[in-house]
Image (cartoon, helix red, strand yellow):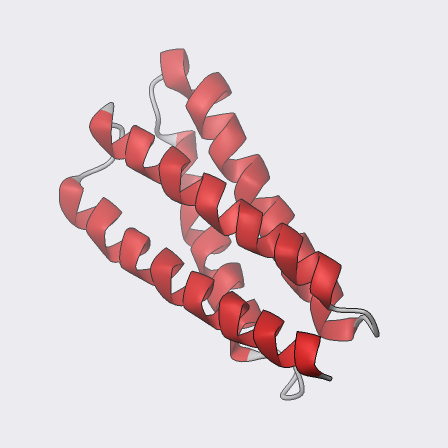
Length: 114
């Protein structure tokens, strides 16, 4: 990725890249509910964070990204609780999502100051 793009963009990209094929393996009964919502939130998060990287006014996009991090976190947890993914897989991605949340929060605070 572009060296001028914040690290959070690459982290979100990696999360979505992992998520898309994972959801394809969900049982049909959940693929089009939890799975579809999970992928759409992941893609929305990626879109918001990429737009924020290039926008002059970053705060609203970062607030939107923060909301998507939170909703994605719950959807991921639901997928784990429905046994659509292993606990190890969930744990690793939940930690990555928490890291993304911290990065977005720090970036948002920095953007609000400027």
